Image 1: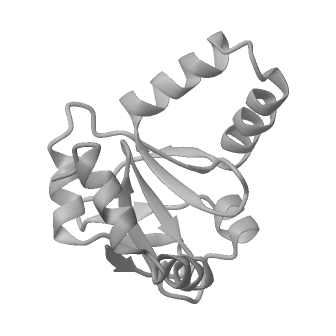
Image 2 (image 1 turned 180 degrees about the vertical axis):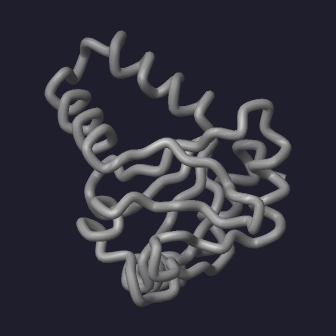
Length: 145
């Protein structure tokens, strides 16, 4: 889990580990967006292209695909980590998600980075607090190390 904050121009100074991770990718472009207009995501561009391919090919839930792909396109932008380790969030994304003037929490989830507001972080932390040993054991049985 990493913390960050947007500056007055909408850039977030990333933790060194994230700068190193993004720098190690074959393509330096990233796609920053929101799929649900609540939580932001940072995708390596290759992962985002795979998502776009899924949007094109997925036929089972076309209405869901339409909503999610619209949100992503409406709020998303391609960007790169700059020479000072900062990442730009689009003005629309910042405004709609209310990301300014608060600590943001970033963590790796699947093949992207989730960006949580302080409220989302506290809500998830509260939900996770009731994790039981049986739940942990279930994932260990499924192969978690």
